[in-house]
Amino acid sequence: MRPVVRPTHAVVDLARLVSNYRAIREHLAASAGAAPPRVIAVIKANAYGHGAVAVARALEAAEAEGGGVTLACADIEEGIELREAGIQAPVLVFGALSVSDLDGVFRHRLTPTVSSPSAARRLAAAAADSRCTSRWTPG
Image (cartoon, rainbow, N blue to C red; front, side):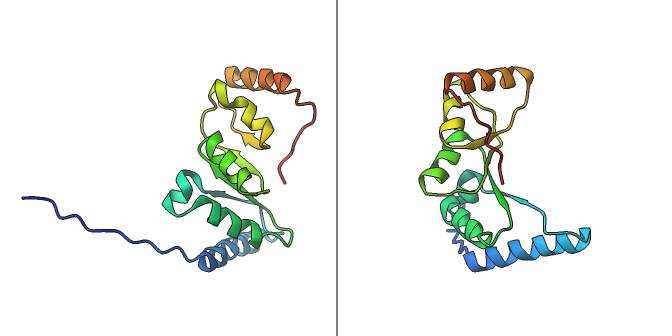
């Protein structure tokens, strides 16, 4: 028997995405009794196939009034794609950093995840090579 292939069709409603995002922030703020927290929105793998740039733009616009969203991606290339699309929100790179890509962290204002002492040393060396003299602190 041949397997039946069923096409999948996903519709992403960006207005609903923003509404859900705001509801999560409000719930967390109410639970903590404080201002809404910063949220990390994981949009790796092209927002799981739903369009990372479109999702990032919608979330960034939702926070234009002063909240705070950090976008998380899997690798430097995904972060660069967001920056090249004009995204200004902080971008956290979850994945391991390859030595050849480290200068992209500084050129594109990405926040790396440092997972080992050797990665920290490589990142420090790349910062020196890039003449990175100032600290960029997200949000």
